Length: 195
Image (cartoon, rainbow, N blue to C red; front, top):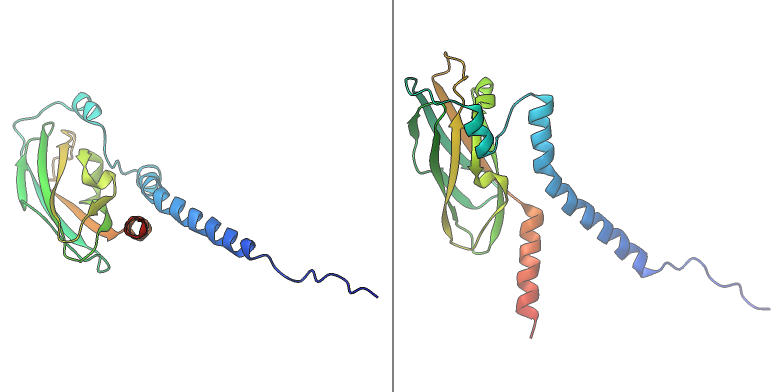
């Protein structure tokens, strides 16, 4: 009498396949966060995050008589071992004209880390009138161990900003991008292991 084959053994590849699918899904989700953030702000809350330089210049007409104070603020999430602060605290601007400011970031850890910046504008009703034409927040930033970098932002304040808004605060918070940092560490380990 022959014993029936044991069909209860599992193939080890099914568990690996599931882990690969979960890793790919997590990686895809991390890249979808910025577009989802933009959709939530622009479509749901009605807040414009930025416009292109061409749109900003075409849509605005310089109003040199009005002056608005722009304040700059910056910080990091507690999981990110970076120092991050604006290079200037305030700037007087004329609506309709383009200006540049910069922030300084330093990686105080002993390894390379990828960070992503999330901007905010206060008061909230001014955010639709503050257009970033160039910003380090558009892409994830990689800083090597001990590296310091200046990060520029270019912006235009729309001349249609309500007249009672005299001060706008531009603030950034940097968060550690765990997925890209892990990927970076994995590629560094692979390159060191290669003969």
